[in-house]
Length: 78
Ligand SMILES: [Zn+2]
Image (cartoon, rainbow, N blue to C red):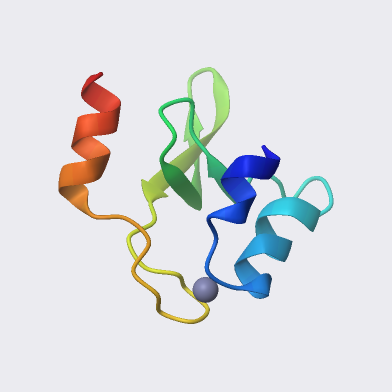
């Protein structure tokens, strides 16, 4: 996880991903495909509560472009 955190653009995003206490995690996290994801909502399903997440394209704190859809599609398909 530390390698993934080093790619973050600013201390704010790094802290949010690394230091949020439970149960706030996993608000921002790295998926198994290596894509930076952010939870944008919680949904009620038949199995219980589930996270709605969304790939992060730009840092929500400083606006740096972090990922683009083509790169994400490439990671997920491999
Ligand atoms: Zn940032």
